[in-house]
Image (cartoon, rainbow, N blue to C red; front, side, top):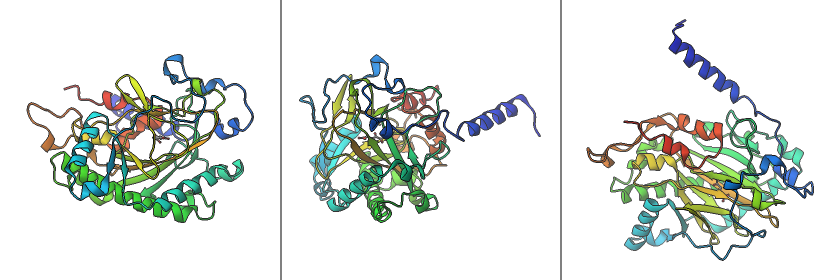
Amino acid sequence: MDSSPDSLIGYDFEFSHRLRFLSWPEPIVRVQSLAESNLTTLPDRYIKPPSQRPQTTTTNHKPEAATINIPVIDLDSLFSGNEEDKERISEACREFGFFQVINHGVRPELMDAAREAWKSFFNLPVEAKEVYSNSPRTYEGYGSRLGVEKGAILDWNDYYYLHFLPLFLKDFNKWPSLPSNIREVVDEYGEELVKLGERLMRLLSSNLGLKEEQLQEAFGGEDVGACMRVNYYPKCPRPELALGLSPHSDPGGITILLPDDQVVGLQVRHGDTWITVNPLRHAFIVNLGDQIQILSNSIYKSSEHRVIVNSQKERVSLAFFYNPKSDIPIQPLQQLVSPTNPPIYPPMTFDQYRLFIRTQGPRGKSHVESHISSR
Ligand SMILES: O=C(O)CCC(=O)C(=O)O
């Protein structure tokens, strides 16, 4: 065995890293169980420091007066050649990486059925959900925290995480079996969202002046990843002290979010302000992740977002992630760099990249910002 100091350092890192991901650093507490125990105060573990608390006095679930809409794009008309919509989507991607899509090709009934199935799942007795309890090794299953930092201040949500692609990771045994239609509905939903993800990739690619298939090729062609996190945000006794999900940008490619159609909660950072997104019925909210920012050499921006909670209504959202193949290096595309516009990110695989959020939990845009080359 090579026992040079370097190889020992490497070995220790790998070893401690694996140990760290074997289990959660503290016993898991289901946020839903806390919420249902008639709390009048918020446990300390969920109280954010003052600078991170949402600047909101609303305790109900209705949109605030300050709510403004992010661009709404009609995909049908765009794909039929509407240049104005193409320009608006391009602007949204350059400015803050968020837009809503309507006429996107996914049946409204399927969207409703998927949301309802997950609501029913979260309303099952806690023992029925614990069977699927997750670990930080793969995050698949029923979870209540992101990150493995001991003593971290946690977010006010439970979630379910599962894989669609690559196919060898799709394992129905790791999906809930109740309600009885959930696997069938979620499977169809995943297939439709993969198709939508592919269409969006072609659109972004041609908007960047590349061949339509170029971004997809950079993601690994047919070997892309697709997974979903279903977020469940219970009612919170002190919403002004907590967050449903802390500020973060998504580490992957494109996120296609089915928000709750009854309860607002998603906020997007725009400069120094947080914009509450007012979702349209049967629209999807699309946002770009860090891998698109990296491939485009920062022409397109991944967006920082967070979720606020309320004391009146629970909220459920389905975040579908369309990601690169996990073991190929991702770096700025050659066509988008030049001597005057050199690549600003070094190559890194998505597997390596996502370890950051899996270890530290959501931390704004600090990861993509710290990934900038020192050259
Ligand atoms: O619940 C939401 O509206 C957003 C969820 C989200 O940002 C995520 O799951 O990464």
